[in-house]
Amino acid sequence: MASEGASPYGSVIAEHFRRPRNQGPLPDATGSAEVVNPLCGDRIRVAVLVEGGQIAQARFVANACAICIAAASLLTEHVRGMSPNDGARLGDERVLALLGAVPAGRIRCATLPVEALRRALTAA
Image (cartoon, rainbow, N blue to C red):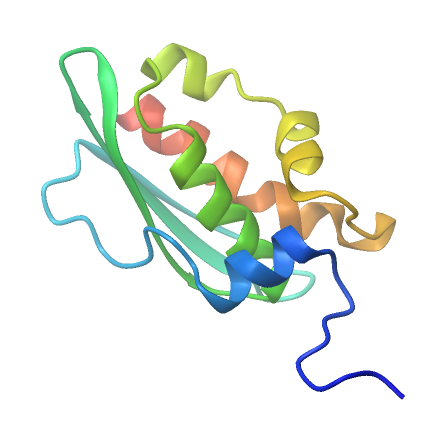
């Protein structure tokens, strides 16, 4: 029997899903983008504020699964202070490595926020 509060995912995913960082709108964003996965219905919007050649803030709003929310939480923390070019070059593999074990059938859930971030930085 699983313990109460146990997660089928790794501790990083569980922590960022239970206590997402940087969740909510970013009214003064310099760029934002929304991406939808039509296969599962995940919908995520990532907004960025670029100041002085750096990502000063990144936030997200999502109606999505645990993996997608955890990835967005982790990603928005990770890119703060990066140049927009470095943030846009973050590979899916990097985010998957930061998350830990992601089931093969759920990779798209984890990479959806990366796509939204890239689009938001292009718009910024």
